[in-house]
Length: 66
Image (cartoon, rainbow, N blue to C red):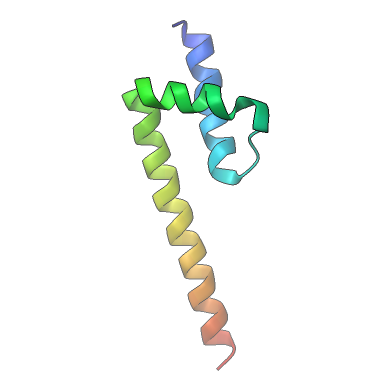
């Protein structure tokens, strides 16, 4: 796989995490994630970061309501 194509998939992984990936790209990105350790690792990191940020936002809202 060329570096340019791989770079495109890495960008699409970010869109997937943000919920902005076009529906017609889900299968291709899923297939790539099944074969690419680096992108799968990136996906794990982005999901962890997103989860932490969302959890922190929810914690702050609950504190603000007290």
